[in-house]
Image (tube, rainbow over all chains, first blue to last red; front, side):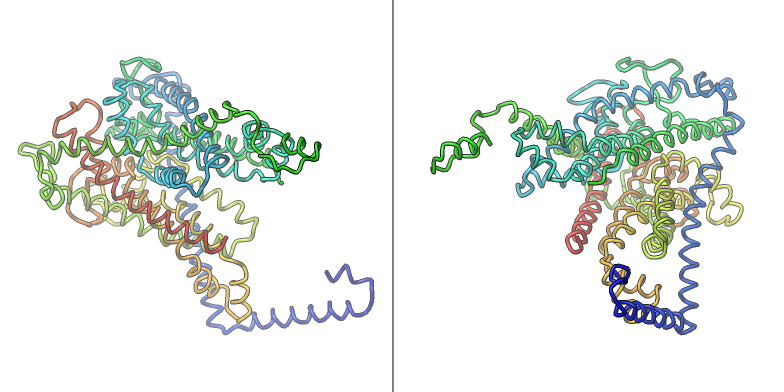
Length: 317
Length: 316
């Protein structure tokens, strides 16, 4: 401000001096606070930093601990070998890794159309004053907070047994996980769709496009980065989710490669890690720790990709 | 749109409808399909409620409601069986309580630092790092508790781990680590949505930074902060893998952090591993406990959602 008027005359110089003087006085005043206040302020800040350090140290400890403990077992046998009670040293996660891969593939196939569809409906079509739309919204928010083990119960009673009666097969696990992460995808999708400015839609509609043409050609392409980020984050949650899989039949010691509909059992990476860790022998705990590192590497790669995607394609309107 | 052009072209004064000339069934079909996707969430909730309630009714056909809710002996798989749910409810509350004791001060302090003290650059680095904690699978945190925290705490404070390696307090600590990012992230959002004018006014009256943070911003953001605490509590109650690994499996009607406890989630995870037959009393017990767990977390979540709405309405 001062700079723009600077060239005109002496008045602006006076303004600059006055504001600089006011600033100096204020800073002086603030620095002259009672000593007790300043001491309290410093102690407070120190406590805040201490708490922050503890949180960050906890994170570091989890990762370092798993790396140190799992280092002896870290090798290619983790990926190529199956579990073995006879030779714990040679045990690996191959069937579990393949199981997780299939589970995630199923989750993506289910969750992308359903989640994006629901998000589009809620953002583009739904009239927020209608009670049924408000009910759906509240429902999605609530479902996001339902404990994962409850989804396991749902999977057991509704998908494995009950109405769908699919039995303990991998596809049932996939469906359970998909229902679990669906609210996350819907919420992220809605955020992304809401970030597309209304003027884009109005422009398209004014040119004679129909509602669906507007959504498909304008809104969706603009919202894609946000949607994909949400999907990746949801998938990374599904990768690490263990409790519901325990209920829908992911068994630990599957030694063969699972398939989608095969009814002789399947396994998943976190379930197998849990099973190794729950055994008393230390060899198995070492393998569990190595498995944790394997899982964290996969998750970190996925999350970094999501962050990169968001930064790369994020649009400023 | 064409209608409008046509009307102006002919110069006719009669107002015409802006509706499209053809009914556009395809558009309606798509709207219907998308609406069905959204409706799936309601179907899911209904399915959860039905799948929980039906076996629960069977359960209460065999076990009295008062025996279940107020009984103090939990031994559903023993002979003779006993179905007093209080010990596992207390077990759940105990691990959650110890988790919150750790996570609340740490999480809130991190949130205050992030929103009131950190420079934009520091914030941009530190907040995502804290949120990484939320992305670590709980089974990994459970293993950390079992293999690292438990032996460590057993050495330093033996009364915290009376039945090595299991302890409600250590399980709580591990859960607490998982809760910190939830509290820090949501509280930080709530405090940052407090308008800058309030802070500036307080500074103008000569407040110190600490006073602005604790007496102005914190109270102004209180509904969002409480919402974050309630959400964290609901996550703690529903957490399964950490308690399965670290809390042990002995039902104990006690808040003693050193004891091993069985929680509701651990009971479900441990018992429902597949090979129990439908219709047996054990099968029904899982659903009765699940119903109780669902109701507890539902009440907490609804409360938190309300509070979050409230602070959004006030400041946005």
